[in-house]
Image 1 (cartoon, rainbow over the protein chains, first blue to last red):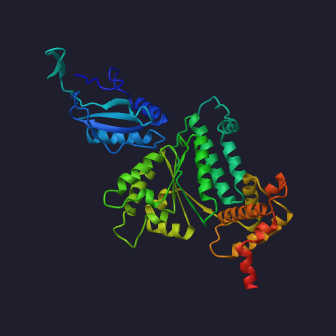
Image 2 (image 1 turned 60 degrees about the horizontal axis):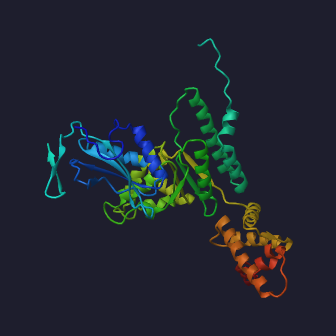
Image 3 (image 1 turned 90 degrees about the vertical axis):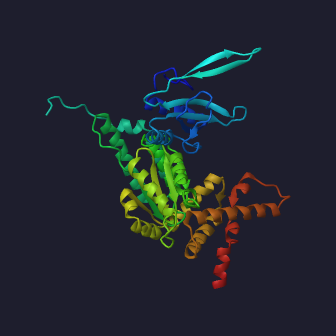
Length: 127
Length: 298
């Protein structure tokens, strides 16, 4: 099943040129870009592993692309995403995050919603 | 052979459209002397313009290697030329962003095992799309300490210099003799750097012209006596130790400004004109230590 997390996840996979253009956009806005990967794309798994440090003060996407390629080469069967963090006052948050690599066979899982007592809602994972 | 003649190509239009003319003119205007350097920069610019034209008609030759080594005594304009170089490469579309990242050994080499590679890579990533200027590059290699991490930084640099030449241009700078020693002990580095440019020392006439330019920028001017004094000052200063070409001139002018301000301050009460605020006189320059030493020797 195709994982739909982050920006552009309902679109076909981005080509490298498109990824580069997105990163250029982030750098142009002064966001710090980082690369993360995981083998567990569960929606509750908010903390993916960092691939190297976040990259500050970059002027050009080539450096990030090299990092993305290195991460894909190291973890070809993992999910890899690119995050862009906006440090300006008032934001201090991720502004863009999109998947740049998927495993050849994506695990199947879906969420099921359960009503509990009162207005409580529980989510259950179904593989 | 094809029967139809290929259409004429307009090199001049391309040259004018590329904005490189402006950058080259600025180089000519702002830097005095340095004929061999300017010649080489022009050659590189010409190569890139011609390359662009060749590409437009399908004659691919691959990106030329533009890594450079600037050697010369202190204050001969290495950093300034590197800045201009970044602009020119950007104007010609060779580098995509045209910024200059100036670093020294401290920015590349770490303090403990495993610290150097990430540090160097980070700097390289920051420099991508522009120019990486490594000042006093010979400090990277310290043969007296075999466990020095500088060698690691050099190896990473070499990799990038070879494989990612379309992403960044590396300029190594430093004093001539030490750079020569650095290259002879790192032949891999020497052979991957295509352009070795030597910056000659300025002669007295050029130094005076540089002083003129600096004063223009700072909105000062020398009166007649001041110019003669400065000429004498330069001749004397050149013979003394630690002479750093244009940098020495800049420092001398900064000190002359200080003395001018003091002189004006001491005669406060008298009305001042705009001219008086701009003028640097012989007295301001002759109060320098350089002249005092001369009297001592005499």
